[in-house]
Amino acid sequence: MTRPALVIVGAGPRGTGLLERIAANAPELYDGSGLDIHLVDPHPPGAGRIWRAEQSPLLWMNSHAEDVTMFTDDTVEMAGPVRPGPTLHQWAGLDGRTFAGRRAQGAYLRWVYQRAVAGLPSNVVVYHHARRAVRIDGSREERQRVWLEGRTLPLRADLVILSLGHLDAEPDDEQRELSAYARAHGLVHLPPDFTADSDLSALRPGEPVLVRGFGLAFVDLMVLLTEGRGGRYDGDTYVPSGREPVLYVGSRRGVPYHAKIGYAWTGERPPLPRFFGPAEADALLARPEGVDFRRDMWPLVEKELGFAHYHRLFTAHPERVTVAWSAFEARYAAADPVERAGLVAAAVPDPADRLDLAALDRPLDGVRYGSHEELQEGLRRYVEADLRRRHDPAHSPDQAVFLALLSVYGQLVRLGDTGGWWHGFFSHLASGPPGPRLRQLLALSRAGVVRFLGADMTVTAEGGVFRARGATLPGAAFDARALVEARLPHPTVERTSDPLLRALYADGAAATPDGLLAVDRADGRVLDRAGRPHPRRFALGPHTDARGAGAFTRPRTGSVAFRQNDATARAALAFLRVPPGPGAAHRPLLEESSR
Image (cartoon, rainbow, N blue to C red; front, side, top):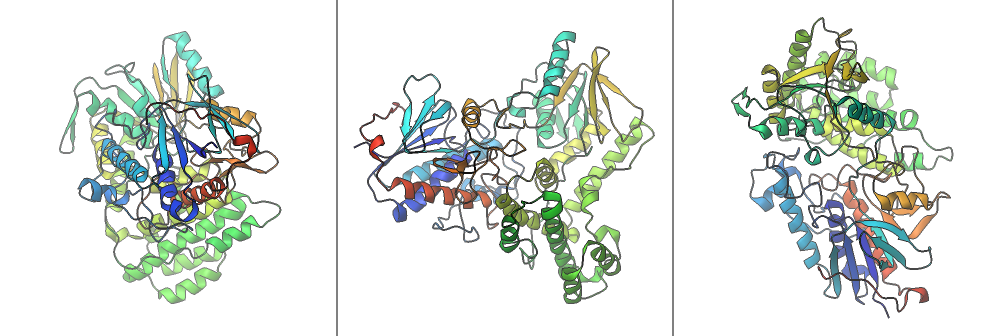
């Protein structure tokens, strides 16, 4: 009889985390009859594409080394056993407050993969197929066939799990039009992409380049076009090589993501969740009419973030408030949004100590400058103020809000697709660049290598060039022959360039209005358009509507991804321990020589 087989498509951090959970749960759930696990990924297991060794050593992680782990702890709500392991800084012998290079993270991930494989039962064999999977077929009742690029015979599997990570996407209508205009007029247009994979050679020294996007993709672009072209920093001064283009950068917000917090937590943590926990998520899930993010979820998120902020302010900085925490908390819990605003105004005298989520989201709303140079000076002041605040423990309520963001993220994942705004807001506050990167940005601005365009940036193709305008500097326009879209592609199931996912959607898999693959919240099984979970197909990661904040996380934060990995691993092992049906017997299993 054919040995049971599992195919995992995607062997990067998410696939590696899943493999670790399979190894942890196998002693309890698998009967020892043997199992073949096939990892399908053109990139090496562990690091995958994003964390591969073959990339610039100038590129960093945006987390401290002590805040990066691939291992579970007792804060993860899961049925499987905890299997502790070292954080990145413990494994690599780094200072915990270091922002490690991506190559170092890739080495850590490769080691985690090797440890996971070594932890599997002796009769479980892992094969790596360095190819792309292009199609899955097979009915719900029979073994699945997974077709690989360049092979004529499929892998046959009892179960298939898609842990695809971040994906490329076909351009949307606007990007196609901009690319066509660039070809027709001899311009350069770089559509959304992973910056480390982009060919930047067409961006000429000294020429203006419009850059749309001010998040982490921009930070990578900034690094590769400055230090990556021979420039260097002398303290707070940038010394150009002469090979840099001039980057005119803007975005919807017009400012970079907030810097990573530069101090350690001390003292009492806010007791989270308080207003948005499992009970509230369960109540929303039980609504027969469904839920709306702004109407139903955001009020709970807003109240939870405010609770964390004021808990920290009142308990760590009582000299800056006018009432005791116990009295404030009782009134805060009972108040509606209007009443809460009045309560905060009376109890917190300094507006700088109040949480204003709208201002954090759109700091340039209503801000106007009279000249380009005034805009540069204004934005530099904004970045400098952000750096001071994010490195000053006197503003530790900011870190409490960060912890609350992680907490509410875990509940929102259970509720499905929350739309693009929430993920952008979360990244803006919680997933910004290291402080040293923003200091470099300031140096580049003073050197004239980076120029700010402000908020609500728009780009048009006219007059044989790309033309940028923004709301922060009314009436001004900036022309360039090059345009870079500094952001990740948004791969909906209809527009992803991944053939397997597109074929799955064409074959009847369900998608959310935002284009994400719909999965069962309990264990990640792929749903069809009637809402039925497929018994033999699972999916994990950012291409699904159960996407978590990342495949790895900081320790002791109840990682959503780890919880999902454990649930999927346990469901898969429970299925595989039952002998396959008659349709699965005596079918050959393709095995490549690389193991």
